[in-house]
Image (cartoon, rainbow, N blue to C red; front, side, top):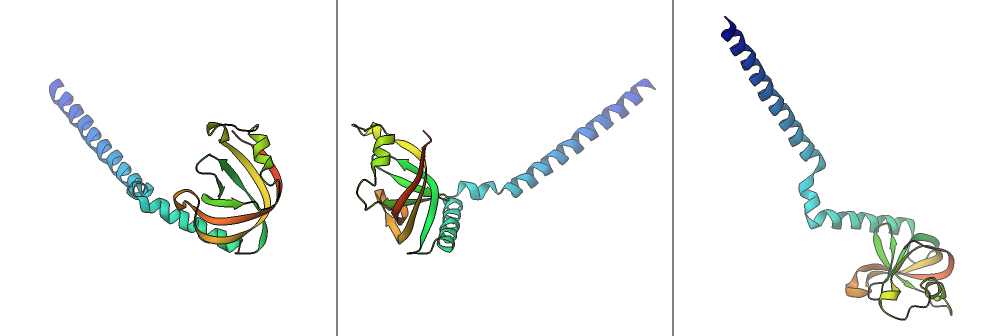
Length: 155
């Protein structure tokens, strides 16, 4: 009598284990589909998001229109760039003393390594060209800076 109860309990525990394994496994599969992990591993996912950001930039900031830009300026000896909504832009500052803010913030750099830093940057300017600019053409826009408004060093 006792062994038949133990067998029934053991079968119920085994049945519960199988059900729980199936339930958790199906939830994991559904979560994997929901997260769309496979598209995250492909290069096209990032390229699609950059093209969406580029479209938004052109909607908000038409070529040749003066606007206020706010983003992160990444100073680097080889790849300086202004990041606007995850899109890299090349800044052109044609007025005299236009880059003084960077030289002062970096404390008069003398070597390549001294030229690195990140800055919250806000300026008045206009997008003058769309294309491929800067190091290996990684910048999608050229922006002419008319006036620097605020600069805060991040790193």
